[in-house]
Image (cartoon, rainbow, N blue to C red; front, side, top):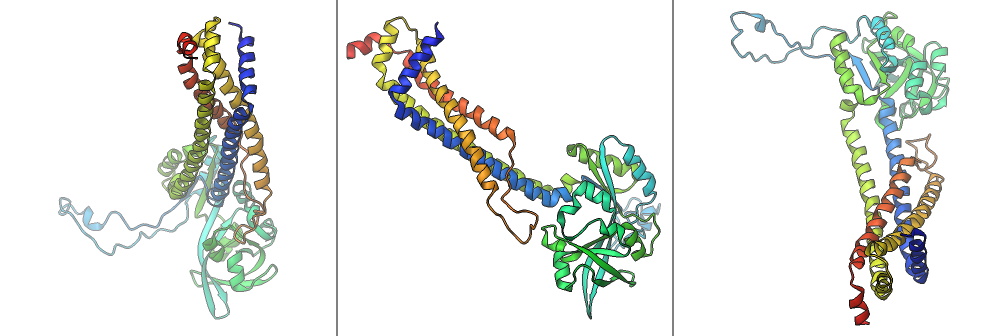
Length: 419
């Protein structure tokens, strides 16, 4: 069959009803544009919210959990081995939160090809002394360069320079909420008390804002050396080892492996942030559901338009079949019309969707909790555009194939006799 002739007939039918053709194409354009812009915006929003938590969270955290003693003396008695023993008010084991032999552990992790990077850390509870008032909080002792490399620490610093924590002895970086409570600014010297009752003075070299109010109101950062001096510990004292992997999906498996290998507690990012990841998944599902619904609605519009076009062109179909065109040829003609509408409307929809994304990306988005975010987040992932154009072609093909299949089975003699 001469496909050039089929396409020529399809083009003539489209131009004869160009208003209906344009309405159908606009329906596809609107559906694709809303699908692309909605998914780009929702995905960008998910990336922003994930960044607040997941980008600041190690894929695996190694630490020593303070837990009650599992084995009680009565359980070791031969006389009471066959009994169920209930012991109340069990006290925690007399263990320090320090990770023993941490240098050997970190050297092993650096040689593991699955590990992207590691960052040692010390976490300790303190009291910030403000006159006669003591504010409870925590100091995080970090390897400044490793923390910035793995967790983009500098993106959360709103005043000062993060590297000053390393270069300035006895320095500290306060959360924005905490600095506001203490009326502290860069260059001020603050006083804090450790859980052991020792008081220390530290110089404020910066202020950070993570976007999490609870953290900004209580937490501060210092270098590992400063924190070790604060606690009166040796240079080998480490309470946490933060690990980032090359493949985050392997975190649960590797966490179990490291926990047994190093005899420490290991928690993976999926376990630590399961509720947050559930929220991101639900938002993504809703976005895809709404976008696909728009495309399906556009497909029904095309179906109705083509169905009416075929009904009005029954005499033309009868003439085509009477002059030698087969039912498959009639099917190809109207399927070509539908795919032409899908291609035209889909391409225009991609362009319009991209333009809407650019417009949204330029809308100011200023909030005190996220000082580094200036405009609404947009994710220009090519996958959204590929899904949009493929779904456009699929819906328009089905919208054209179903009524054309019915038209291809029409007996031309009955139509001509009826006319």
